[in-house]
Length: 260
Image (cartoon, rainbow, N blue to C red; front, side):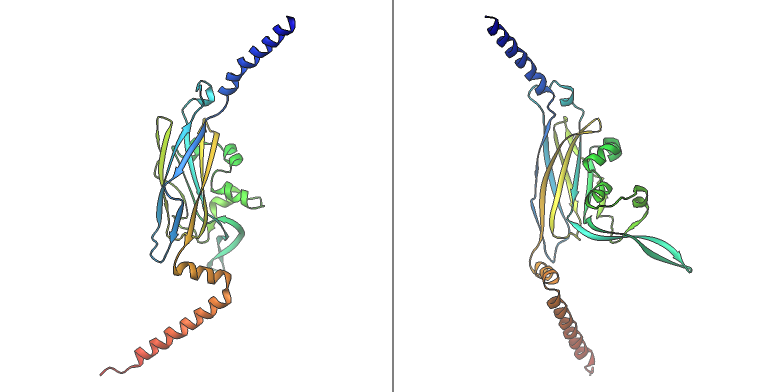
């Protein structure tokens, strides 16, 4: 009898704690993309895609971690490329670009948007721990110690307003549950995997992160030229020389004709 009472006490003790443990489980994210593949051809003039999602909360929805307000932050990170950092310096009366640092895994594209500005959603420690933000992505991909102050002042070679940007379009977030936004991609995309990261944030803490991939590929003559340039550079260079000679020869014939 005593053993039965101990067993029942233990059973009720465990049952009593199951809901408490369930209440501490943070909410998760469910997401989808309007496009999974983007094709680049000679007429490519940029693209855009929509992100849809929802906050999936726990069954009880009674714990503090499962209660709104929530914030959503979305990052789109392009495939890595090599890039040089330059700083303008004056030398003998002339302004020159002096190379400061070379990087092997710089994101070719980066976009970040949120229900609020970045600095109002997450703190510095959260950004570092979850690799949120362009500079944190750079630091995570390079085995270098990089000063944020230097990064904020130097010029990025090849950087344009569309390559690294903070989205001005707000994320539509209905009833702290459903969210959607539109991401615009520039014309100078390179082929590869574009990582989409969605963060669910509450009081500057990341509760959940969901990821997906958009594959960008070149098609048609663009694909053939890209393949030839990267896989067979000798043939690509020879073809470029032959084309230059052919166009030069054709132009010389046309313009050397006498007008009557």
